[in-house]
Image (cartoon, rainbow, N blue to C red; front, side, top):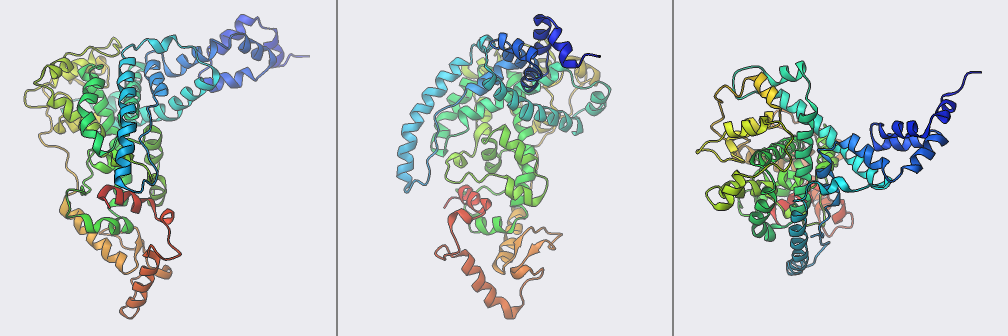
Length: 489
């Protein structure tokens, strides 16, 4: 009678069982393999102290694991308060919590100086599964998205297309790890510095930008800037679909458009406060939002941040990059320009590309005119690929203007049109070339007639009156509440 696979495994030496378990692809597979039969379970229990860590290296990679561990370990004191009755109370809470947060951040920034320390940690299954899940479910999909997105972008010089190069020779292990490290560094930065309100941003942006960035080589700072723009561009279609087309959003901000001190008109730019706020929510939330591909799913998919203070953080990494560029003529800036790599992967491509792009007329870390180069990932690829593309031997034809977005005048016209539709009961999606998706009271597809105007206004007042029994704060759609946070109350 032939032996079953389980019986064959039972007869293998323990060393081979260990070899099988050490070489599975990820920690989830390790858990499944350990439950396959008693022989593998016994082998797992015999080396339970080592196997999760060994497999985690297989999953994340030895050269990426330190960043992954720092992200996992980072958990600064919260700066969140719910339903504070007066702004003075909020300020008092922030002062107390802010001091604890600053102490934690300063200590953690010193902690990450020792990059090799995480490689000495032995992980249990519970923690290894969490690290494994974040990498496979968030970092790997974003790495793939970045490669696909960069390949579709136009190059800033004549020669072979990046898309053609990637089809001939797919992204290498070093290239994928370089992208993954930049993603983890973004997540670490947002955990450390993405939770401050306006009152703290300007106090903290300069020391934080310098304290964090001085751990990186200048081209690693540009890699972080590249990921910042990539993630922002993942969010812009989601946010834009709502703020450019949603009637309710327009009704919530139309009265604020001329008050520039409390409202920044939508412009489809990566540095817009709405985009910067959503970036502070982190990679996992960004991936969820970026996966929404319809108007309704986008309305449901963007978290409102109700009751939190994170929505007050309007500048985030944009401020940090500007501060770093402003430091250029100072001793601090000189140190940033001559920083050593936080991780040297042995490939000089990114460094050479950064040096090739240096110019007295352009900022070294985040020049707004370099948006095209950030889009195709000019500091993300291997030297061999850059040579194949011919970019190391040719002068760049770089953009001379910052990326253009929607004009404030066009956006204001859109708001005014949608606000008028709101006044006559219109709800839902509107665009200049498509009004068929606007819905009116009782499910009508046309605006109410003149004779029905008074009844419509009565209906609108009933559903919008905050004192009415049918209305409560929790029933407001997220974009009304979020709009109020962006424009002030």
